[in-house]
Amino acid sequence: MLRLTVKPDEYLEKLVEYCNMKIYAIATVLETNDTWGEEDDFQVLKPNLDIKVAYSEDPSFSREELCLRQAER
Image 1: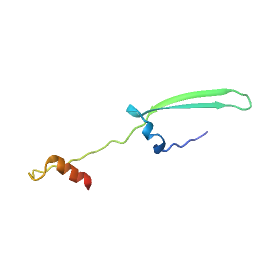
Image 2: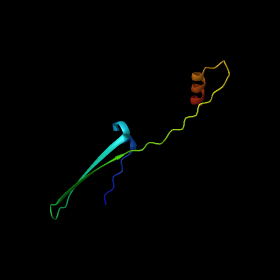
Image 3: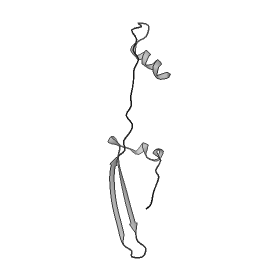
Image 4: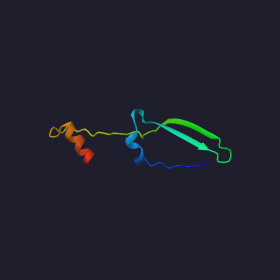
């Protein structure tokens, strides 16, 4: 078995819509000169985001300002 580790910084910028990825593998047996090839495609799953927004009835802050202040913390 051959393992190949691919780090996120090597592929994140290349992901397209829906984060689909395709892998191609080709191998040749030296003793028999037989060749094998295979491909596989899969979707890279990103973690779900849980966004919470604090809201205050304080008239001195707009909703946008309040969200920005919470995000800066």
